[in-house]
Length: 512
Image 1 (cartoon, rainbow, N blue to C red):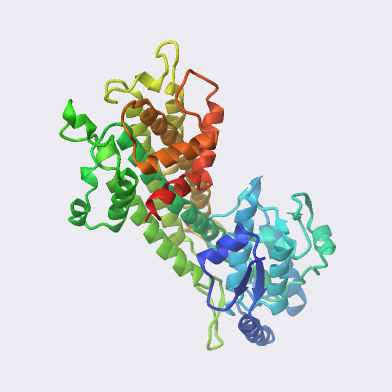
Image 2 (image 1 turned 180 degrees about the vertical axis):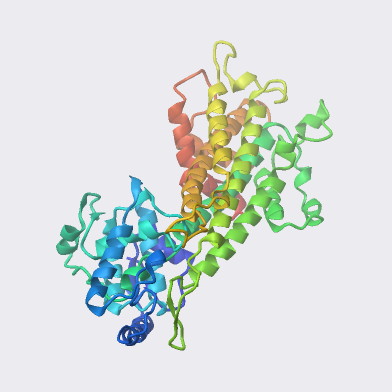
């Protein structure tokens, strides 16, 4: 099994995906263990002094003015975990919790938190045992970190609360730890706080969304190319010299992908033989501009994610010179903004795909295709309601594009008086990515059917490869009305698991 070694300088996006989705094992580097021990010595020295230090010998948040005596400090650390494990609602997905735990471990291993090496090792042990704490949908405001979600994870480290075992069964965490020979941790000064203070949940969801959107944006170029082909559009607008004069890199990449898919098509531009069109509709002609803008948004979000993956987010933080200083690095604004930005781009990509699908189904705008791509229009309804489903998905995408990061509700007796709502931005982005996949699947379904209805015209080799692979995957072609939901589900799976891209790239080579 693949192993990810965590050091002091952060992790990569591929590390996060390997642990969260691939079940990779986690090991601590010797460098990380040494840094953990050195930082702990600093915290222990401060704990022995009479001067109050936030997180070490004081209360938390609005209660930071109280100095805590040594005999109460272990209880303080336990209590912050127990009281902050206050989430509600549905369980969060296993991959999200694993990313959350791994990214908190990443910061702990930086040597900037003062957590003991044995606590970090126990965090790795839980991940390696496949023990996933039960984390709930609601509880994070995205400031002072993802407090409630991280608290539920810390609770499991203490042998409290519930967790899911590797077999998928939810049991008391104490039972799962015992079954895997893992000793629950007894938290000491600062450790409870250090396990809770991070943007790890929203960052983990950002990293996974970026991976999914990388696939979806290339898939959207393919479905847009197929729709252009089915509508007998012109590929002249995809010429690289046209995109060079407006040098957005995402736009150029999108146009190049579409051009590669359409290479050798006998459908593109065919309308000019008998029914000239000066220009195609915006949803067809401007596909690279819209998808390209989204790609550039993804690139910016990846830059933010990479910076966060290299960061050590905690409060207070142990500095290299031995100082322990309070700070505001736990604020989720940098991550929250790009999560919302990605949801806006996803909504627009879904919107333009739906407009192309509607055009394929409208006999007044489809340039010779039957109404709703039906076999016997009137007797058959064809894909009429498939477009309804797509429209409903796009409508929800637009609602999900309303930014969570524009909101803030003060908390902790006005100590935490401005929050990022980054966790909420991440949760809705996951829904957006899920729905965008379905939207593109419906466009794929309509476009492949429309191309097969263009009798006597030869599609591009890449298009033919897509159609053949889709049919093998259970995505059926033209014909009389049938139970449509299974076809759409098959199209969804075909896009979601990467078989669409695989079919295309066997002909075109890797898309950009």
